[in-house]
Image (cartoon, rainbow, N blue to C red; front, side):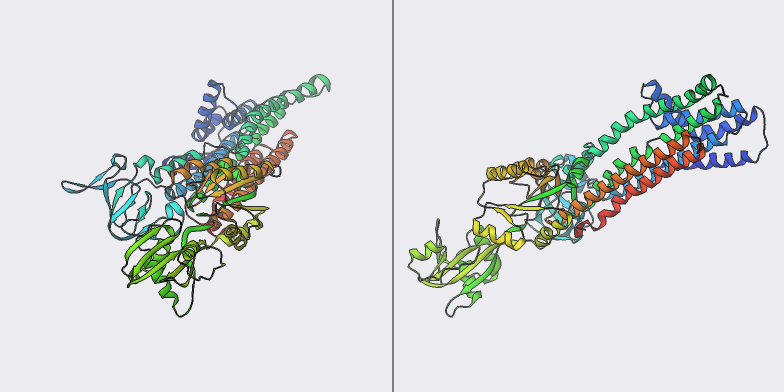
Length: 632
């Protein structure tokens, strides 16, 4: 609880006690309104000041003006009629109770989110004359060696130059499992070093680091209002003056009609009282507060799980998703080649075949060579001589006095090896020894663990069409698409071709439904920008992803897209519930107030009650994010 909230709570208690005490003190005459004026000013002085400032600034039509007008009017009626002043104090008191509750609820949710999204480190450790010195991360230049001890937050993006440890990346990715790092590994600002001392060479200044980019994006998210929020803002601007005019008409027209047309008693006090009740009921607090709060809770809750949404407009648009277009490499697949099959012939063992191929390729940095060496293991590599790389064919090397040839079909044909063609989908590596074919190895991009489930689950959230775009050859693309359950695939595409295909999909979409593109955020920036909603995958530390996309998934889990869509639709349902509930109750109470069926007490209970229920319903959006990692 903040100091301001504590202060307001004390005011509420003091005013409530004073009002209750005055109910049992038989005081009459001029002293009675003076005594009631004390708790009224204690509880309502800030509302009166805000109303006065609004009038001075020529912007009077807000809830403070309505509350001030209604309660001052009730006080004046009490003086004129020598009646009860409890109602005026109670109306202001209950209004402040509702405001305090709303402030506490919003403040609590903001605090929870800010704690989880507080990525800014307080300092960076650099070597100085007297050992390690703590400096402001803003003052650290690129290329500086910084030291991060266990328990400290990594202040800047960089590469580990010495040390091993486990890093907690949950603040960026929402993933609770620590990530092991060692020399040569990239690390990102905002993560926490759990074990071991790490020495890191910085690669970015703090303002360009991952943590800074994320904080800037989260801070700016509130500036991008959704259509629902814009509607409420416009609604309140038009609604409030209409209500004030309606209250004036209610206070004047019926008495005038009674007096001059019906020749009855005008009943000025009765109609003025109804007009005051009308004003209290009309306060649009529930709408003005609950709708932005719903989006705030949804965006903040998603951010805790590594889904960074740049604005409420994107959260609202995401709820209309009808088509999801996927990039393949790095999005649905790991983007890393791995050995998936070894097919030896004659009497050679699979491990020996793999060892020969990896040994021949051990000095190459080609992705295929890297995957072979990784599968075989560094310890299994044998020394080579006379290694020869043949562009477009493969490599030859002498191992134990024998010539080992590793490459494609053309290499086998060039050495007249009687090879057996491998029909599997993937990159096929053929191996021969002294011109005799030994077997083949299949290297493929691996589908991510959750990709199949993500594509399947998308249909359950109303996504009618899934499309995959890739630069891979047609057989490979169709095989991956079939394994994933994607019916539409476009292969052998250049980046410009992807934009053309996506533009065609957008042109032919149904009505207001949104087309989402999910890419790796590095080489897909044009397509991310073209889509209704661009979402980048595997984008931790990627400036291109953060700049080009509307939503950033800070880890590689495509299943989180399903969770984000479900969250957006539930948030929009809450928004619609609050709008319908608040407006519906207001209309009913306004009619009852105008007819004199409800009094000021009932009016304030209705107003505060609606606001509290709407706020509680809005906070529910934060609770809905707990299962977002599971896509539910």
